[in-house]
Length: 321
Image (cartoon, rainbow, N blue to C red; front, side):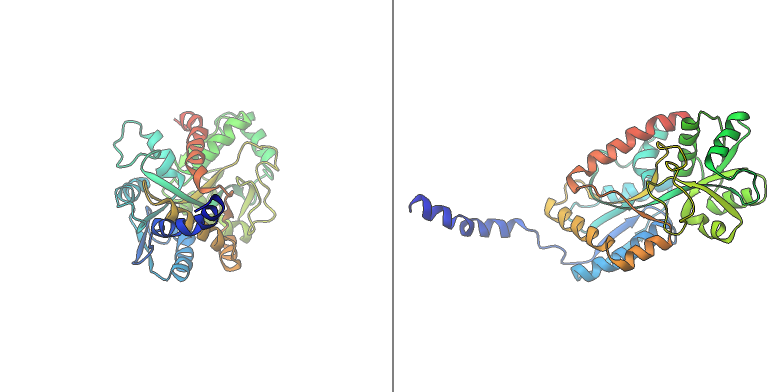
């Protein structure tokens, strides 16, 4: 066989090996673990996507809520499942990059840098800064000025210690050179009730839980922490627009698999998620829940992206004590 004939035949000769390298997946149901209770923001994000994955791959994609330990229980469970593509995880930054830093002496059943293959950065819930609607504070610059005038007199509520609202409020205080007092609550409804009841001046918490109050006129939104405005709160500027370009954060959702999953499966899922998140119905659902599309990061670069997020929040966690 001469060189020209060999080159012409090369694709045909390679075909059996390439076909054999592609896993026959999925051939049975796929489980998606969510490390939080049913009905929360993660469910709102994941369940419509799971339904579309079922349609695309012609297999059930079931959602399994495993709450506990601030998300560490479900994340640890998912990390220790077989890396065969049939056990997936959708998590937020809390249990993945924040808890391990907050509890440096704690024993975790996973290692954020080694336990997972990161598949797709899906979307994010921006954090809202808000005050009661009749507050004399009408914008973020006034809020910062008030906090600077009376150090530690400005307080803010959040869904709890170590929540993304807590850390975003702390980040704002660092950027505004203002010392603010954090008031932790057991969830967004309690934080909102404290502001409306005049026992807390402000809140930094997930926008989704406060949209109705802002649109209903009982809360005044001062800023959202996303890079772009939330579609359901078009009149609320971003923190960057309000003069604080470094106050950017999202309570993002990441699709993961146990470390060692086939790269072919990871790429198929990554491509499928990108397609789904561009569909009009999913976009409308995300907008209604005050979610924003996360930045598009190629699948091989996601591990580095997560590591960068961990490094970015380290000084804020230290400042928050």
